[in-house]
Amino acid sequence: MPRPISGVAVRTARRGNLSTMPPKRQPARSSEHPCPARSIRSDSEDIGADTIQHDASPPLRAAVIGPGTIGRIHVDALRRNGVEVVSLVASTRERARAAADSLRVPHADEGLAAALDRGIDAVHICAPNALHRELVLQALHHNVHVICEKPLGIDVVEAAELSTAAREAGVVHAVCFNNRFYPLVQEIAARRREGLLGRTFLVRASIADDTLWHRNDWDWRLDPSIGGPTVVSSTTGSHLLDLVMFLLGTRPTALCATFGTAHDDRRPPGSEATEQMDSTGSFRDDLAGLLVRFSDGTQAVLSLSHVAAGHPYRVQVEIDAELAGVSWDSERPNELLIGHRDEPNELLVADARHMRPCAQRFVDRAGAYREGFDETFRLLFRDIYAHIAAGNDAQAPYPTFIDGHRQLVVHEAIQTSVAESRWVDLDWSAFDSHA
Image (cartoon, rainbow, N blue to C red; front, side, top):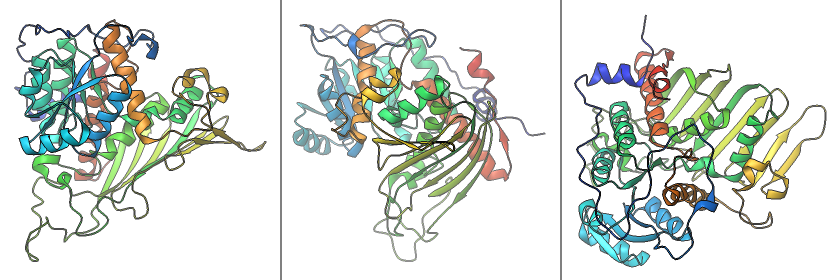
């Protein structure tokens, strides 16, 4: 009988001699900007934005690795939270300098080592997936807080190693599952926690974009040496599973997945017409479908696509539940449909005056002023840097490396399901033992 997928089981099978001990750390750097955070528990009360220090103390300082679209969003969101971005890191000095000049960042560094010497408090990793492990460990080695883009690593082995290392280092660690931070996503979660939805029956959710719609489209995620073994399921897939798990407040127990490739003749740019992409080590998935069962009995039908013409990036979630249904679409992020059968449906606009108390703090402006994608990063970083500034043991109100590790466990199960054409059970006992 097939064994369920879990972090420990996969690690033992694939890399049995891997040490999950953190790397040897240097003494905490002497800097006029010391790291105030201590170890973080996950069983205490939340902290909020009011814990950010706005007095005469020096601003927290950060470096951002990766000057692409998401890296630039990080820079903007950090500045809007009063964090000083002191270094932009890229693969070449020329690329780093060009991006730093355009964003008015004072220092351009070729590699993280130079940025770490500038007395930073935190590093944001917006580099390709295959570089995450090395960069995270390098930052932890210098006792620096780490905010990493998803996925946390290439596979569950790396995720387990990084989660353990960060926990032992005692620094703040986060993964950028920013979709949680749309105000009306928080509203759905608040309604579920307060029992206003009742028992949940079914989730229909998807993420659709047009990144690879044309057969000539190319992305670094298609190269398994950089992006890892999958394409859509490791990138937007981790976003979607994290979002659904957050909204339901529970974990999947079993799943069945299928992958598809829209263009079998896709080739890297500059290649000859007869030259095909080397697919060794890659599923080449630019679309995927998943059936998921959760521990509370909820079922989910999930879809992922990089070939959705007309949708540059769209997240949709619908939940069928006992007392009401809810429907949210990121292309209309400030509207939440609350469905009924025996009374008129409701359309809730993102306005703190009409939202649940737990969701109100995610709305900074009156309902007439709309907030969107960039705001999710600002709100995520607001909570992360509040935690850094507070330096306390309160619960982390944002996704941590533990959440990143969970998504790689799910990702491993997805790959197993596709490769073996079967349902796969998930075993979470390794996580429960560290709770």
